[in-house]
Image 1 (cartoon, rainbow, N blue to C red):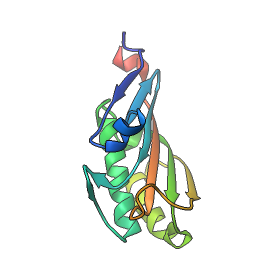
Image 2 (image 1 turned 180 degrees about the vertical axis):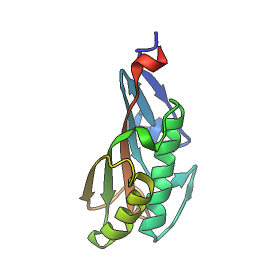
Image 3 (image 1 turned 90 degrees about the vertical axis):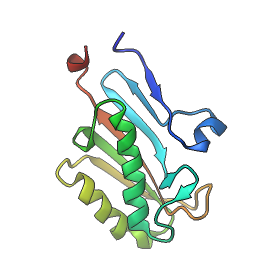
Image 4 (image 1 turned 120 degrees about the vertical axis):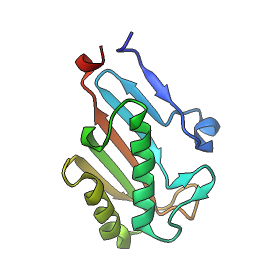
Length: 134
């Protein structure tokens, strides 16, 4: 059944530790969980919020590929930052990836992440045409 809930995993150790999926598709939505700038245990862009944002969004977009979707399907993004000073850098990365798409976007400054080297974590939500996948 094509409308069933489908989950995909990534190489994030957090998914196993807390019992979550990288992305979940249900009906016409695909939700990508909080995504950090890691490949396995390697942090990308340490100390650089722009590079971390690009890496985290790339990881989130890679999860969408599992459902045949790309940046043009993204309808909502959320960006979590640990420093207000990083708003412009993260915003620039967001615009590079989604400037043509113009998803609804939220940017929030938080106190910290589980890994203190992380400056940025992102989430994306995408729309998929369920009629086309039937």
